[in-house]
Length: 303
Image 1: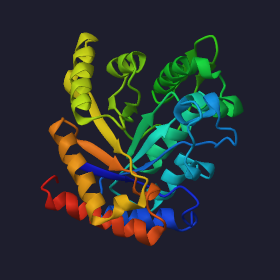
Image 2 (image 1 turned 135 degrees about the vertical axis):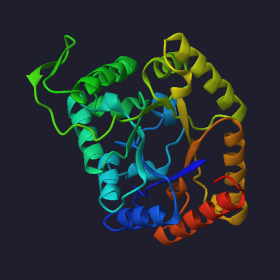
Image 3 (image 1 turned 45 degrees about the vertical axis):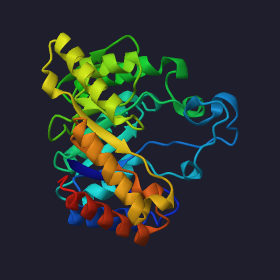
Image 4 (image 1 turned 60 degrees about the vertical axis):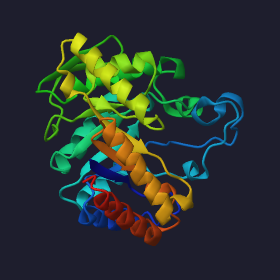
């Protein structure tokens, strides 16, 4: 099992110091990947459709009220590491201008020596869409597909040319190019999301899915990929294990995380990452938790 961890992105941390310190230490400890997520804002009104994940009246976590840009966070980590992969878990392309986002992702991959993993999602917050999205909330699936089309062009050879009636790139040089073919992981569990993964992605990026369902969905995705003329073995899975309660960082709490990793290993998952910064109260606690988790996973024979 490959093992990753989120970078600290919120005001629980000294963002001028803690991102780089933690990135260095996580690589030293032995983690395989570092992750950052896209959170533009947190609305004051969380009633009705403004609730978390569009669940009516569901409150947002307080940490979402102050969250750094994921690509800036990953660039900081890239500058002080050499080996770990750098993942977006997730970036929401429908909230960004697609050519600009594709160029930025390519630059991050080039600057890191080919270590970027692009975890992408269609998004869900109507408030974030109202604030910045080029397309409305109801078109988010189409906007994600559009980004994938544009990124394929931008990341491909020069001259880049693209025209879908909405965006037009006259034959142009757009550089830097990625240092490698950027792996694309997509989130989601609905039928449109699964079809998109099977047709266009390198893997699935689930969270809060039971191991048995994860195994069944992976099997189905690979069957769907094969039906699309793709190698089913090319469909991977990186699973986000979400922890937010400080109790999760206790010895018993970390043992439960290790149990979950073992269950996911049995389900066919080969890469997980854990949201330790959401549960830790400061850098010291985060570093201790990272050391403890990595040690526990090794002792369990999962690495």
